[in-house]
Amino acid sequence: MSVAFSADSAFVASGSYDRTWRLWDAETATMLKVFDGHRDRVLAVAFSPSGEYLLSGSHDRTAKIWSIGAENHSTPVATLEEHAGEVKALGWSPEGSTIFTAGADRKIRIWSVDIE
Image (cartoon, rainbow, N blue to C red; front, side, top):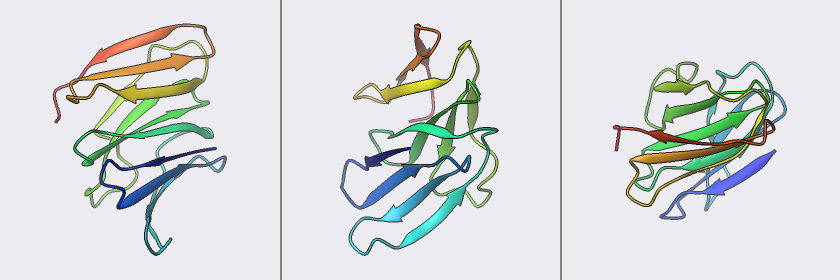
């Protein structure tokens, strides 16, 4: 499991062993949405610098980019599939154009993204 605050501290994301990640209102602790596109437990979550996207890493060896405002909570914006083991840690660059993922395969991957 993992948790992350949005940059403005308005939201919290939590990764879970039930293959989902959840979006919470940080002030009221009210769950707002459940996103469910991974095939195994979610080990890491990170908000984009703008707060519009969330990056999740899973035991299924993928990282996924999600639009926080999307109506469909089962379809990510993108799926990153290069790790040979679970994705244990991840993060965005401050300008939002680069993603870093670290896996159980002992590799760090660097991804260029054009969504921010």
